Length: 147
Image (cartoon, rainbow, N blue to C red):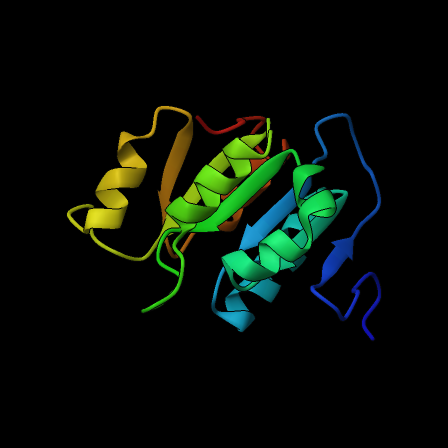
């Protein structure tokens, strides 16, 4: 087991470096990308990263997920799977008060991406996402919080 990684629905833990450090949810169906995002977020100052590859896996971790201050949600989690928009609605219906950022590799014209852009309480970023943007999301780097 790697340092700071829990093998069952991984939670990467890092050292707390400042007041802007957040516990982050990463919902991404690509295992390698999900792991990389969590590692970068922890290296950028996030206290912990709760990782899920599907909405169902996210729901199984309800307590940890709802304790996050930032959620990074892949818009499209694969064919025949619940989407990042479904995750968004579940989070809000269950009292999640943190920031939500959608990640997408699809064109803005994709129906799910259009729906994500229509949400006023969320931000949409394109993949691949720059490491500096990730750092800004957890309050490191240029100081920007991303809006």
